[in-house]
Image (cartoon, one colour):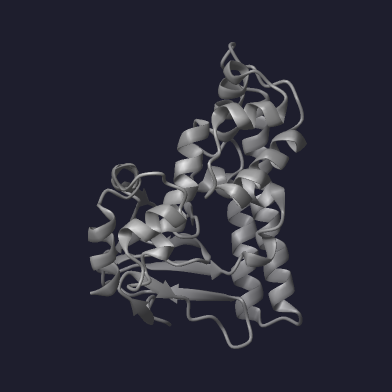
Length: 288
């Protein structure tokens, strides 16, 4: 049995990975609460016995036995545990997947967190839960090439989720749906935004790049991404800014500029909307 948080600098956790590995699995029975923290590995939590409460970026998830919660990298979250219980927790470094357009699409829809239950999973709960259980089994059975097998199962789980999300976008219940094309075109756009989000990207420029009118692009982007272009862009910038704020040598104004914001006031306002605190308050949490 391992306690969850071993290395915590302010509210940033450094994952205590297995030796020479890129993941860690906790068979956790601790009943202590865990404070606000974040880390770059993706996290998957499955309660085995009793409930578990996880708050991610202001949203509270009341997990029951068998529910599957995925927490996106960089998400500020805290945990409340019952007096008795057990849950399996998996953290994995997904940097090796970051060059995959499809992976970025999935992360975009998972963030800040995605809870998969029998009631809300569009028929994939059993499949996802089985995939996560295979990850745990491979780890504890100590099979040959277990890390490769574990990451293969992680990819399969994410692919199941991504395919379901994509089908939901392509076949929405909304009769006003405008999406008719292929995802490959939008994957290229997401890749561009992910590489240039600190630059002065405008709706007009991105619509022109995609070959659409501004009005059509606005509707299309929101349907595919699940949020508006500017909300998506600002979300990327704030996530990046939160990482920069961990460096006490950088001023808040400098972080704002390096994150793509033209004014300090706009940065502070947007940071508070996304993180429920000001950049200065966030930095205090990090360095305390």
